[in-house]
Length: 61
Image (cartoon, rainbow, N blue to C red; front, top):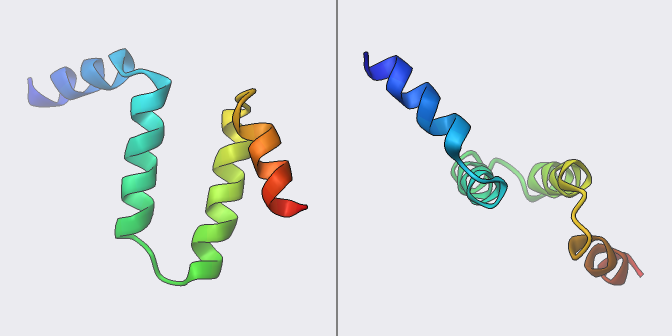
């Protein structure tokens, strides 16, 4: 019963909530700064939001 309830709640979650959860898990599993950097870039690419793109370009340049 518990498993099913958890699955349903996960489906209902918004993308923003999921993102913040991922960030929290990243911090918890942090081993090296390089590792988190690459993970963060992958996250940004998968998210593909209009407001993060220009911000990332700014940071790179």
